[in-house]
Image (cartoon, rainbow, N blue to C red; front, side, top):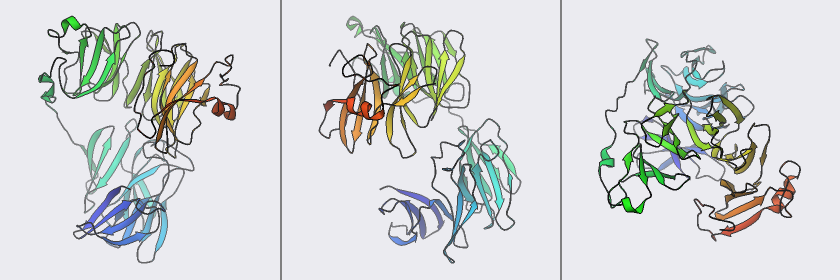
Length: 445
């Protein structure tokens, strides 16, 4: 039941959105001490902004704003609620994503973000004249997080992770330059035998000889030889002011891939085990994440957040989009290189596990649960799939056999959903305690 501050137009009055009401999200007027003065409207008003005439500008329900290129019946639209007349009017209504509305330099002017012309840009609308025009012209950048100053003279927004300010009087855009001279110095402090503080990831090579750590934005390496415990501490593979994360080893243990912001955006880089030879293999404005090598090492699968799965050929560095399916949280190659596992949540935030063919022509929900299913993993043979299920706070590990020749197996292409559901087995339960992760050690372990 979280509360979110929408606006603070008057010294003694704030406006919040809250889920305290069982009917859904509601907007309340409160004072500085948190006392609720009144409920503004019994209606889902998202990101409501109040002007001097007592009108509330807000955005309708719809798909998440991260899907800025979406078009369709579940798009977001912009409305105004007049507190005096108690009327709600659509000010922008179409099949496009219309988001982050703010009041402009007068009570008749609004600004908002829309993809109505195929690009994600800021639009200005005069409500009294019912006229509008586009004020930014980014072709490849995606605009988000639009805010206005109290007098409407300035707008601030983000375009592909860079901050900008727009002067509504002069109609000029200025980029805000932010420079970071150095990384945090936490990695200089040695703790016990293994190294440093602030670890976020620990990835063991396939042969078990080396471990890569993500630590305070850098990648560190340590071997697993106990004889070196008192001599060798984690060594920096990267040492930059930028951030590195999402580390994954290749099957041959000679290279690893990771995501870095060293080029200005979240792109994928590869490195040899010494860290001396690196190469940037993606260069775009998207956020790359969920990296995983195929078991042969020929292909690297990754996600362009939040919804696109890409297969990168490590031999010729050509790429193929195989899936467009928001929102993605897990990605895992199968042992036979033919299938991948993903978990994704739908518009209602229900998370399920899917199996997807390497060419993207086949995909299927295999968890089929009313709960949340995530962290899917294969057994070594590639004929069993395991995942975590959280069903109303009850955590368990489920599995399904996808070998149709097995008496407990299913045909993922031919059997109907009822059979897939019936053939699932619960292999472990915690009686309410949370399961965050698990590993398959051996058969039935």
